[in-house]
Image (spheres, rainbow, N blue to C red):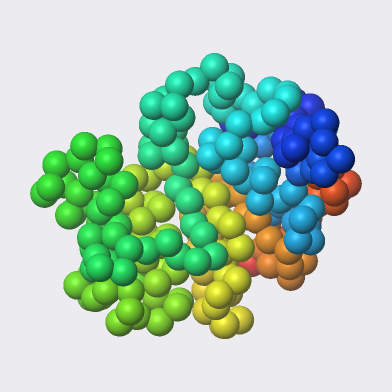
Length: 231
């Protein structure tokens, strides 16, 4: 089992009148190679779940095992190592550094891994070519469309060749045509063996995943496999 949550709670302001249970007793298992859409309205707990799954946050209660390892037993350095090597993140806002070129943005996680300059340039070029931007490596984000920026963000996520891709509303800032291209690329990564977890509020976007986990008020209210809308 690649990912396992056991009765996980994430509570803010515990014991106060304003207490919020962003995750309220969630249990979930995800095998290698799955494509799971976590769906819910604003405030349902889906982004909190991604933060926990991505080792960006720690549960208040409950257990989280990532590839058999109890995450709460890890040091900050070990958690950072997991985020750098095992998980590729894609965000709605792209999270590119404006002063850097596309090539330099894609190289960043490789720098953190200690990859040599020549090797990281090679890996970054390969990643940009995979997303159709091999000729835009010298351009800065301000010189690119939203769709191109998101493809740079995808290239950055896959440059380290992580086994898990986590995408938080990756099409939220894109037009429908460009959004479908991005979702199609996530499907391609899944076909090649990556485990993909897609966070979305949109049922149409969730239709591109092989499995849907629906959240409401911090609880899983639906978990089902489905026929995939291949793009």
